[in-house]
Amino acid sequence: MELLMLNKVSYQYEKTEKPVLKDITCAFETGRLYCVTGASGAGKSTLLSLIAGLDIPTSGEILYDGQDIAAVNRDDWRSKKIGVIFQSYNLLQNATATENVLLSMNIAGNSNSNSLSEAYELLSQVGINKEKANRKILKLSGGEQQRVAIARAIAGGSPILAADEPTGNLDGNNEKAIMEIFQQLAHDKKKCVIVVTHSQEATTYADEVIMMQNGCLKEM
Ligand SMILES: Nc1ncnc2c1ncn2[C@@H]1O[C@H](COP(=O)(O)OP(=O)(O)OP(=O)(O)O)[C@@H](O)[C@H]1O
Ligand SMILES: [Mg+2]
Image (cartoon, rainbow, N blue to C red; front, side, top):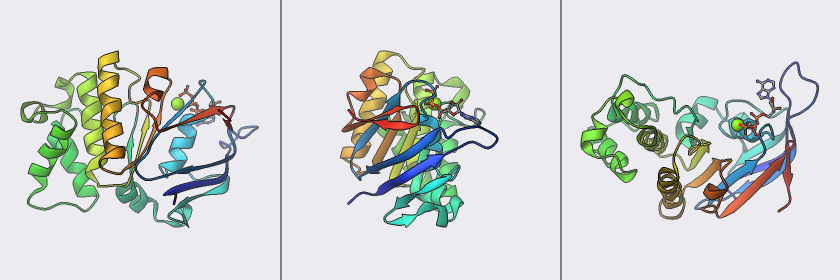
């Protein structure tokens, strides 16, 4: 059964003339990697922000395990059910990689005495060793920061992981490494992973590609 179901979801920004998402119906399952792609302005980030619970649909519904997420406490949704990776990473620059991950573990109510070793373990899963884990974010490369952002997003133990252009600023090798991490999280850790991307190369890692055009899904 699908974990997340979008049922005729439309969205219109306030004070605008027309909707940017129109009647989107699609399903996301556990253990699969989805890439959402399409031209600039197609509505990809808007769709992601609805899934992330940052906004609610103007009409239609988003169901998680059959329940409308609009009825779920939004803080609970964002801290326990979905890990979001923004294009700008949103990491605390002056804190270390480990501190960034720990912060998110605490928010999700997972804090305990093993937190620190868990944080190192999560970071090592995405290829950040202990030495880099103890560095401040501003002393890490773009690719390394992206890895930390992924570690932080999975630290809450959420079943869904959503990322907006996670490889947008990375070179080919880093893009490959990051997409392989997403693939592993979907296939081995059974996460439902949703990645918005412009990159043709990135979509080759997906189990399913969702193409958007002018706020609608385009049949492939
Ligand atoms: N806060 C906002 N207020 C009004 N319109 C907005 C707002 N944010 C986005 N839009 C409009 O909604 C449409 C979809 O934007 P969105 O950011 O979802 O596109 P996108 O597919 O993510 O594009 P890109 O690939 O460039 O990131 C665009 O026409 C955009 O101008
Ligand atoms: Mg976008």
